[in-house]
Image (cartoon, rainbow, N blue to C red; front, side):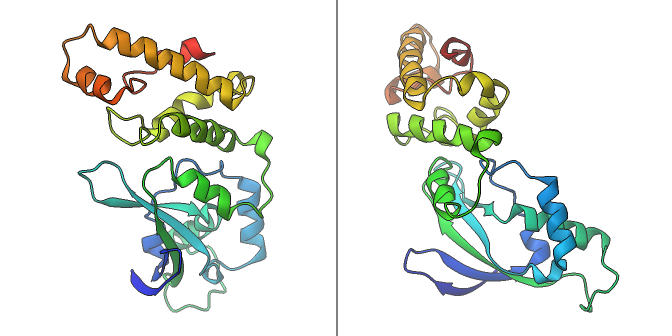
Length: 228
């Protein structure tokens, strides 16, 4: 990537090839991709015109890891670009080669949970069918849990991965919607206390680390059955 500018909020504007952009993973808290939206984009423009406006986040999955980038805005356009690069589906292409350059804005966040407020900020002017998108519903509960347990939602144990929690909550979405965020967080706090007591009986290094953190929800997801 070629750095073009650093904004006042410390986010950075880069130039890169579209093929490199398509290899960056989509942030898992993003809204579920809508095939109709992808189809509308394909029918309304050429893929090589989709060359700006992408947003990335970057964070460390653990203290030992290098920062990793994720696409937080632009996944529908990237779906169209990916198909174009793989299949050359447009016959009236004016480009001499498939690949083309795009601009992206990347910002560093402290953790995967901190990506949610940023996602909400950049999407606050976009129409969101909140009631129909499980990921967006789940995000609000993850934010509530992060506020109750600040700094505890990270990738690797003894911390709790927001991505893994999201995957565990998705099949329980109907039950989740019956709880307010406050009620969900309260129940999680209760189960965390119970699990800490149980971990105190175990001779296990991971259990010891969780007890030191006063946080046990990453031990397993059996506690979710007791929340709903």
